[in-house]
Length: 154
Image 1: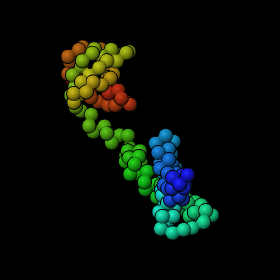
Image 2 (image 1 turned 30 degrees about the vertical axis):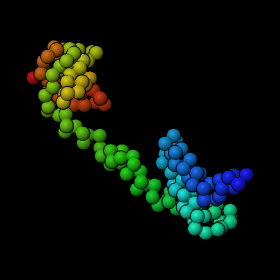
Image 3 (image 1 turned 90 degrees about the vertical axis):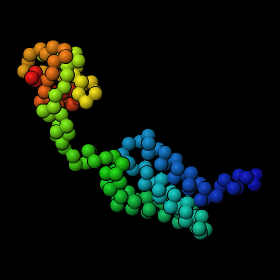
Image 4 (image 1 turned 135 degrees about the vertical axis):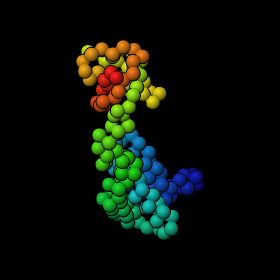
């Protein structure tokens, strides 16, 4: 029974609650639960250093979690979610493709499209001019729509 008392220490309970909340962040989208996990860890640290009542623990948990969420969420999302979603336009990556040459690996039909190889990677391709382009032809990349490259015969 003595070992059960060791597990019921508030600092350990808050630490485990924070760990569960942080692991839940991987499952639930939105980057919100993370801050409540950090708030639980802050309470665990305070409980480790001092002896405070459950009401004070809950108040510290709520206040720190909400403050962390309000002041750090936008900044943390740019770090963890990435630059592209927050500021880089979708046209920025066109310079990597536009005007470059590629080799047709599967005949490009005006209706069904085909495949090209560019920088060692196979890409879906569509012809710009509405003409069929034979396999092993060299083409120039003129645009991009999603994962499909627009090409014209050279």
